Amino acid sequence: MIYVHVPFCKSFCTYCGFYSVICKTGDDAFEAFAGNVCREVEARRQEIIGSAGVNTLYFGGGTPSVLPLGVFRRIVDALPFDSYEEFTVEMNPDDVSAPFVDGLAGLGVNRISLGIQSFEDDILRRMNRRHNSDAALRAVETVRSCGIRNLSIDLIFGFPSLSDDAWERTVKTALQLRPEHISCYQLSIEEGSALERMLAEGRFREAGQEQCRRQYDSLCRALAKAGYNHYEVSNFALPGYEARHNSAYWSRAPYVGLGPGAHSFDGKKCRCWNGEMAQDGTYVSEAEVLTDEDIAVERVMLGLRTAAGLPAGELRSIIGPCALQEALSKGLLETANRHPGEQRLRIPENKFFVSDDIIRTLIP
View 1: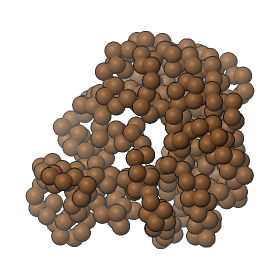
View 2 (view 1 turned 180 degrees about the vertical axis):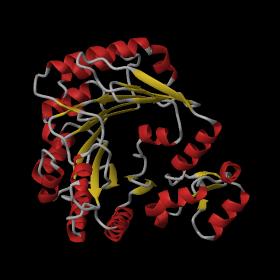
View 3 (view 1 turned 90 degrees about the horizontal axis):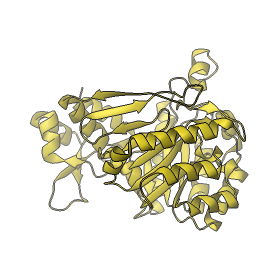
View 4 (view 1 turned 45 degrees about the horizontal axis):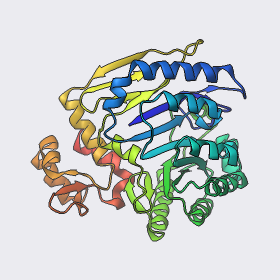
């Protein structure tokens, strides 16, 4: 399971707090980036081979789709595997073209994640997105015409000027496109983002929780009616198209993160991360060793975000029988029905919106 962080963007979205730098077409930094990632691959080859229990490769960012195909090819060729069960590249709709998508498919890409966010042009402008709704629709059409049969799109709700009617139009448009996977996130104020600065300066206000709850609930109803499985708090998929890569994160599978800003995990106790990129394109890493308490908390926080939940015995051992019984009696937890022969507990879907609050009551 390999993640490559691409730290380049043509512009910064107002809500984004991920590490990235502004780039230009033909930027020499692309080649320097590729060279440093390839050297990191060589230095960590055995670690990468050992993380192959989940055979996935994911290029995220930043905006991976700003990279030339040649840069993708250098990195893919440097990796020790010939193919992947799931090979995802995040793309901005503005970067989508048939030759580019065909080129990615030729490298083995079989899943595209489009950062659409909204089909409302005024909302896209407020987010400082590079595309408009027409470009998003064309991008989906192009991806499909190139034979990609596993398409994911990202949407954002809870923007203060996003009316319920506008949100429902966006969801309706998304469902008409019938992507195999939809990720929907509530707008949040991320550290270092433009929205954080605007909020501090009084130039932005957050949407109320009542608005966010309405929009989340209407999303869940619409996607359930359309046949999507709500398999994680923010993720929905047609049967069989749940993201293998992201699902492995939630189960604490080992993964290797390459590139500046990327994180890695050995599947046990060691977590490490790369720092930001220096002028010469290099970066250094740091690490931490998790305590048993850290691991238990992480298991609860990740597992209870999913429809599969956690084994009842494991949850009982972490939070104690009294806390578990109280959560069950209050309806904060229920039996997950997808695992015959093994009792698992999950947060009910109608309480997914407040899952963070529930988890905090379980592990204060």
